[in-house]
Length: 203
Image (tube, rainbow, N blue to C red; front, side, top):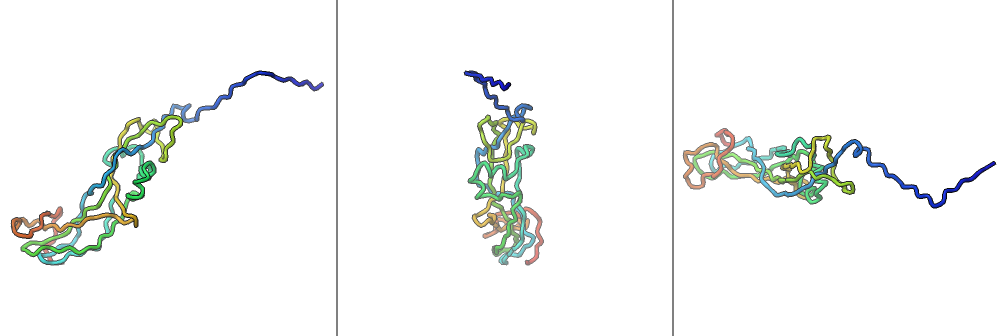
């Protein structure tokens, strides 16, 4: 005999399982950008020099990389930072290194000295921190957890190569003198002293 049993007015609560990670004690963190500004990066010097009155032309290439000054151990990438701040993605290199081509002609002022050229790359200084995520928060970057050694409020700071709308890097070229300070007070003597020794020969 078939017997049907009906339960009337019985309320059965639905239980939603917590994410597996939370059950294991995970706490999630998302990088947050607090501040950014354009800065000048560490310069490099071209490998040619010339006497007073000569022209110095360079078509060298130089690779400028991202430098982490704080929070390098957090496991973040440049992509993580640009993901959480859309404005940055258009103004900095999205890769770790940005190859910059310089092609410029500078003039060594007339005088009894030799010159070279120093190149200053344009960089973006970015500062931020790791923010603890609530259950309903989302993160556009790869999240980190307490098992990664990350804590709420952990700070990070890095400089990233800037780029223009065409993807080219920014740089400024400045004439420097090849360590000759005997004529430092002479008219038109370059104000900048080269950071490296340079060969005192015409280019």
